[in-house]
Image (cartoon, rainbow, N blue to C red; front, top):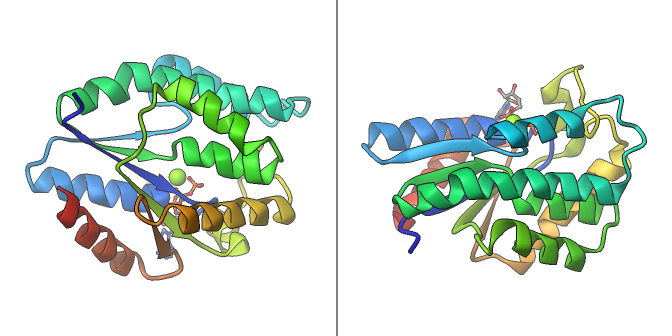
Length: 204
Ligand SMILES: Nc1ncnc2c1ncn2[C@@H]1O[C@H](COP(=O)(O)OP(=O)(O)OP(=O)(O)O)[C@@H](O)[C@H]1O
Ligand SMILES: [Mg+2]
């Protein structure tokens, strides 16, 4: 039985996922909760090695199927080594990106069939799905501006691509309003954080 809660943070580049997930980690720690923050792709040794391949600008030949499966491979290892054990122990597990990222970036963004991503996703995650997903919605150019000049292999893609990703997230949020909480990422960080906390209070 999984006693913990699994909360993921999603959205396009620079929307505030890392900022808000770290704020929530500190807030829950201060409240005496058993809490842990992980990020995707990565989080455990094997998955961090896969992350390096995925973000390497030299890998221009990587096709979308290979990219999709590498994200899934990294996720499968993280689920086995961290997600399941932590949820079994009752941890509030915060994850910076999860399966929705693959659906948004490789599905809506690159045109990989979403059904295929969902079935491979089920295999990779053993059916573990977030109890709550915080989706921070932000204008693509604003997000990339916040991130500054340094860009990885994915971030270097066109504005058109990044807009498809953002619209993918908006579409998913519309289809799953119970699980996915959409928040305007252009709001001040404390305003966003207050909304997240209010929602978390109702579930913990
Ligand atoms: N609400 C906000 N308003 C203005 N700037 C913000 C806000 N939240 C975060 N930032 C700033 O924007 C930048 C990107 O934020 P952050 O790293 O949290 O985004 P991210 O979604 O994790 O990005 P990435 O997709 O690259 O991991 C940081 O410099 C951060 O300080
Ligand atoms: Mg981040």
